[in-house]
Length: 149
Length: 82
Image 1 (tube, rainbow over the protein chains, first blue to last red):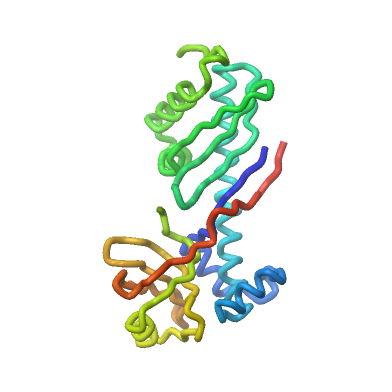
Image 2: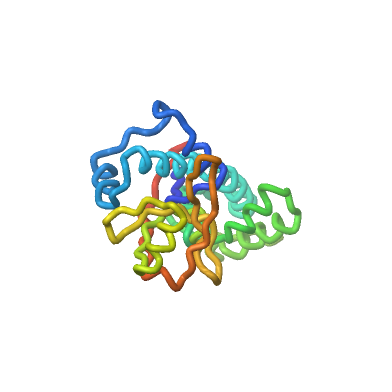
């Protein structure tokens, strides 16, 4: 499974952690990042701190995306045995998750609001879970012989 | 477009630069200014400013913003798991 997170989003908590992190904890910038920092006339340290804040948040979002993907895959497999979740992509600018599923080299794509997935993962909302289950059931191709609820 | 939490480079009007300088932000000569966005709303962008006493949030009104440059489009793979 491939997990992708686009953009460079950080939470305020991770941003503050990064601002006070020791120099040793900061990531070493690539040449491209150093050039980007120079173009913005931002010090390499300040650029590294902002990048680090993004990395901390990206790691958290990646874990959340994986949790969501595992459950979506399980739901899909209950409707279509043999289906596999290949990729999950959190598009942070759109606030959407994209789940790519595969069945015998045929692909289907499911989209879900990030807020809905958060409601489900963070609060265990039964309503959110039911909505997600409907999205999975309705989003799978009919040609995959989806089992009705 | 959800801007909350994103790292962005903004292009400001001269008044916008003056406002940030009044807020004790050291501005580069570059037309692009790197800022961390906390939230976006009708009035403008709430941006994070590092201060000695911690993070401050500063409202940068839309009327001072000429453009916003976001490093979007390129996804980063954060995990390859079986």
